[in-house]
Image 1: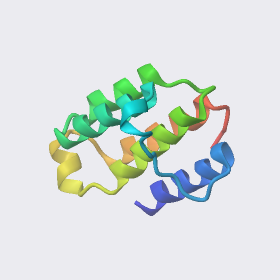
Image 2: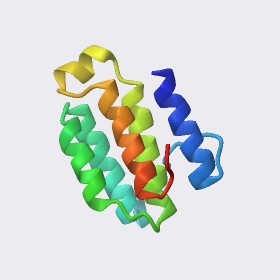
Image 3: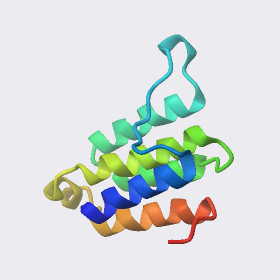
Image 4: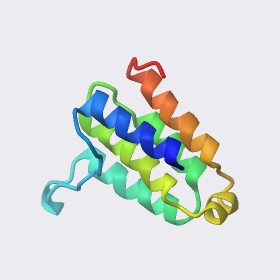
Length: 112
Protein backbone atom coordinates (compact mmCIF):
# COMPACT_ATOMS: atom_id res chain seq x y z
CA UNK A 1 0.00 0.00 0.00
CA UNK A 2 2.86 2.36 0.77
CA UNK A 3 4.33 1.83 -2.70
CA UNK A 4 1.04 2.90 -4.25
CA UNK A 5 0.75 6.00 -2.05
CA UNK A 6 4.35 6.92 -2.92
CA UNK A 7 3.63 6.47 -6.64
CA UNK A 8 0.54 8.68 -6.42
CA UNK A 9 2.50 11.40 -4.59
CA UNK A 10 5.42 11.21 -7.02
CA UNK A 11 3.16 11.41 -10.06
CA UNK A 12 1.16 14.27 -8.53
CA UNK A 13 4.41 16.18 -8.05
CA UNK A 14 5.76 15.40 -11.53
CA UNK A 15 2.56 15.76 -13.54
CA UNK A 16 0.57 18.32 -11.55
CA UNK A 17 3.19 20.07 -9.43
CA UNK A 18 1.12 19.17 -6.33
CA UNK A 19 2.08 17.39 -3.13
CA UNK A 20 -1.24 15.59 -2.86
CA UNK A 21 -4.08 14.81 -5.18
CA UNK A 22 -7.82 14.87 -4.57
CA UNK A 23 -10.25 15.42 -7.40
CA UNK A 24 -12.78 18.11 -6.50
CA UNK A 25 -16.08 18.50 -8.27
CA UNK A 26 -17.01 21.79 -9.87
CA UNK A 27 -20.17 23.61 -8.87
CA UNK A 28 -23.03 21.21 -9.60
CA UNK A 29 -24.58 23.62 -12.11
CA UNK A 30 -21.30 23.66 -14.06
CA UNK A 31 -20.25 19.99 -14.03
CA UNK A 32 -17.60 19.21 -16.61
CA UNK A 33 -17.08 15.96 -18.48
CA UNK A 34 -14.43 14.99 -15.92
CA UNK A 35 -16.87 15.71 -13.08
CA UNK A 36 -19.45 13.37 -14.61
CA UNK A 37 -16.73 10.78 -15.19
CA UNK A 38 -15.58 11.10 -11.57
CA UNK A 39 -19.11 10.48 -10.32
CA UNK A 40 -19.48 7.44 -12.59
CA UNK A 41 -16.12 6.04 -11.44
CA UNK A 42 -17.09 6.43 -7.78
CA UNK A 43 -20.39 4.68 -8.46
CA UNK A 44 -18.66 1.76 -10.19
CA UNK A 45 -16.12 1.44 -7.36
CA UNK A 46 -18.92 1.42 -4.78
CA UNK A 47 -20.65 -1.37 -6.74
CA UNK A 48 -17.42 -3.38 -6.83
CA UNK A 49 -17.05 -2.95 -10.61
CA UNK A 50 -13.45 -1.78 -10.40
CA UNK A 51 -12.31 -3.40 -13.65
CA UNK A 52 -15.14 -1.68 -15.50
CA UNK A 53 -14.25 1.62 -13.81
CA UNK A 54 -10.60 1.29 -14.79
CA UNK A 55 -11.52 0.47 -18.38
CA UNK A 56 -13.75 3.56 -18.50
CA UNK A 57 -10.97 5.70 -17.04
CA UNK A 58 -8.54 4.66 -19.78
CA UNK A 59 -11.16 5.02 -22.52
CA UNK A 60 -11.84 8.60 -21.47
CA UNK A 61 -8.28 9.60 -20.53
CA UNK A 62 -7.13 12.84 -22.14
CA UNK A 63 -3.40 13.18 -21.45
CA UNK A 64 -3.45 16.83 -22.54
CA UNK A 65 -5.95 17.78 -19.82
CA UNK A 66 -4.61 18.06 -16.26
CA UNK A 67 -8.09 17.46 -14.79
CA UNK A 68 -8.08 13.96 -16.30
CA UNK A 69 -4.66 13.29 -14.81
CA UNK A 70 -5.86 14.52 -11.44
CA UNK A 71 -8.94 12.33 -11.83
CA UNK A 72 -6.83 9.27 -12.68
CA UNK A 73 -4.48 9.78 -9.73
CA UNK A 74 -7.44 10.33 -7.40
CA UNK A 75 -9.00 7.11 -8.74
CA UNK A 76 -5.95 5.00 -7.92
CA UNK A 77 -5.47 6.73 -4.59
CA UNK A 78 -9.07 5.85 -3.67
CA UNK A 79 -8.51 2.24 -4.72
CA UNK A 80 -5.43 2.04 -2.54
CA UNK A 81 -7.58 3.00 0.47
CA UNK A 82 -9.98 0.11 -0.06
CA UNK A 83 -9.81 -2.95 2.16
CA UNK A 84 -8.10 -6.02 0.72
CA UNK A 85 -11.24 -8.14 1.06
CA UNK A 86 -13.29 -5.58 -0.94
CA UNK A 87 -10.63 -5.56 -3.65
CA UNK A 88 -10.62 -9.35 -3.70
CA UNK A 89 -14.43 -9.56 -3.91
CA UNK A 90 -14.21 -7.03 -6.76
CA UNK A 91 -11.67 -9.21 -8.57
CA UNK A 92 -8.97 -6.54 -8.28
CA UNK A 93 -5.60 -6.43 -6.54
CA UNK A 94 -3.05 -3.98 -5.20
CA UNK A 95 -0.73 -5.14 -7.99
CA UNK A 96 -3.32 -4.01 -10.53
CA UNK A 97 -3.51 -0.62 -8.81
CA UNK A 98 0.25 -0.27 -9.14
CA UNK A 99 0.15 -1.42 -12.77
CA UNK A 100 -2.59 1.10 -13.53
CA UNK A 101 -0.56 3.94 -12.03
CA UNK A 102 2.44 2.91 -14.08
CA UNK A 103 0.28 2.81 -17.21
CA UNK A 104 -0.94 6.36 -16.48
CA UNK A 105 2.67 7.47 -16.01
CA UNK A 106 3.62 5.85 -19.32
CA UNK A 107 0.72 7.55 -21.11
CA UNK A 108 2.12 10.83 -19.79
CA UNK A 109 5.65 10.04 -20.88
CA UNK A 110 6.96 9.39 -17.35
CA UNK A 111 9.03 6.24 -17.06
CA UNK A 112 9.09 4.56 -13.67
